[in-house]
Length: 477
Ligand code: F6P
Image: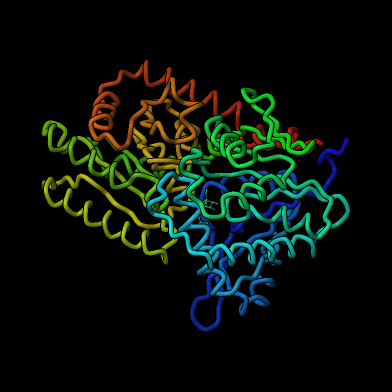
């Protein structure tokens, strides 16, 4: 039996947790990358060490400078970085194109947003080969290779074709769509076969796994599924076995909880409370993305204010939008639609001493983020579809007074763990969101505490270390 103990861990993801940006005068600056994958994987690498391979946001032409910077960054840590250089053209066709104009909308069940352009798929294959080549350049002995997310589905297939025998496993951070949606993909069979090159394929929720099994059996007639209802199922094709499991990703609960109690954060909370004295804060923290349902959330808030004048001056929505994929046309349009809607709402309801929405388009630093979590009576996590959503878990972990209420979309992966304690809403139905906000505002402290305590228990027990250990245990062959 092979297992991962004592083997070096190689994590491969499209993005590294740091982005190297060129600023004036040929100078480069290192910034943190955003997104759930980075939040989840960083503590694992910190604990276990290893090598993280990914894209640092740079292009091929800058590779020497970037490699030096990454080396320096790695010296501060107990794990290393290795970047994969991609050209500007690769970036356009593989990242903007196939990853974010095909797989992202398809997997989030909005196939009408997909641009099924054949040259996107060609670039996807080419860049996946490049990632596989970088892995092979670094590979020693029995390294354990863990590939992450939709951008890199083809990597195991490429490695196998080159004769690599190491364990190669995969985790999909985003949802997997129903067969009816997935099967619209012109390259559906190739993508499924590539996924079946991994010995273990991990999904966030039981629904994602169920959808995947349905797609596999619809496309590969000889596929037999065993243990379908269990956490880990098996697919047998021509006597070869593939494991498929459910592993809800999480956060480092203790780190969030402890940092939230720090003096720095407490001082920041005081500042926020002073600034919004007398107003109940509702908080939204979302990466700029149509899947996050930001426009729908704003419309629901508009309805709330329109129908409940008694709430004017008493509530405040703080909506943080974290910049993301800013060069993709859908995201450019989304940003301006959000900003238009925010100014319409503020224009209609603002009164002396009260602006209904505070909108921020930037990445908060850690102290600010934790302080906003702590200062908010309500968190509004209302995506139209989301693999998991770690903002919901971060909000609970940092709620040290246990007086916050989580309003949560039925279509976020987190729903499976929080359904009994969050206020669930259908984000497509403004009424359901309005009713949930009203219920949250009226909820008594005892009930708030009971619900929050239960959610905290879940996040603490099933934290990021539980996630990685469970996944790695399942990957034993
Ligand atoms: O969590 C899903 C995900 O696509 C991650 O893979 C990614 O790091 C994050 O969202 C942010 O997206 P991007 O890397 O495209 O900025």
